[in-house]
Length: 484
Image (cartoon, rainbow, N blue to C red; front, top):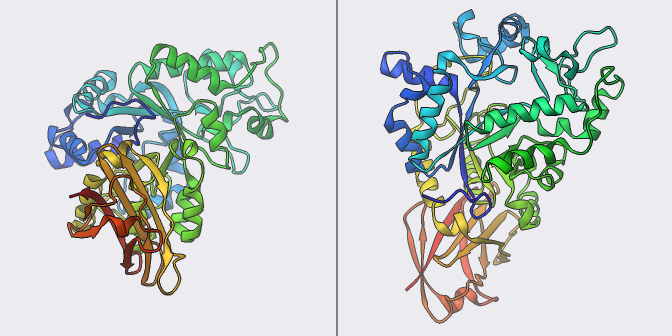
């Protein structure tokens, strides 16, 4: 088991939507099961694949109001038609980010079932990450009646719906007024209750509660009369408060708008790397290289992903060759490697988060086998705990602009990743300034294909020679470097 020391390694995280997961397992087992009853083989598979954390999305109790709104919205109903033909009203449970109570949904087994699952995951060296939504709660959250002063109120006295400054309001939510000390205390109390039940939190839209962002969204409405103005940064206080009780607790921020570094400075272990996602999906290899050239202190705190519950299924969004090349980069770049349940099997249909059931899809065996090989290779200690450095390809003929190459070094050895992230065949030479290989015979084992290449260490380290590489469009190598 790799010790979860937050920054001593580069962890792998697997997102699972709890309701869909249990619905699929219940259908397979022929009976309704809870979180406590997930089969051992399902959890053993997560351990075998090398995941350090499971982000179990959507475990909290939802309210009737959110469900009603989710069933009534025409644009959502059209999404349900696309994703789950023949859906019924019973399939619509509402958004998991309109939380009515931070208690585990009874139909999932309640808090007791979650505690059992957490213990079973821990026995396999896997930490549990849950949702925390700092910006808003459900329209029928118990705070509405108990603590109305902690919400933003419209000029007519009604509690405002949650929103960010660039999109329409989320009509199933109530906006917390994080400017007030009362709201901050309530939020940190809730976070402490969550922290007692898991090993980390994924903080939904974490940048919305930054003071300047909040002012941009809600500055036109005053605080509730009689409330006390909060001082300083919510995240600094919240993270320090939780870590005083749970020193190894992990904080993952959903973050956009180039605010990732700022949230890292406030104490987040990892922040969503939407910039990397955009480059892998639509950008150029030069853009990918430039992004990976940022400081290592920033890189190691990035959560890399190709899909999640908000994004399109990557198997539907990218051609196979580019998708697999992008996945190699995702799984071997510094920081957190974030995978989404169904991604490994090549699912193509994104299920709206308001649904508690999804359509059946056949497993893409080639996709599944590729991910098993890649995740097995990504367990190399060089890639999990090593030091990272970009490599500079040299031209042999034609352009080398499509290459993205880097190495990982550790006491256990070195690993080299080379990706031709372009639509044409390309070749290059890459000097490998890896300590300890000069004067020796070197075996390069491609952990994705099993092929082996014996090379002269002096030539590999020679700045005018180096490793010769020729790859087809979106071709990849993931070499384990072995001295002979």
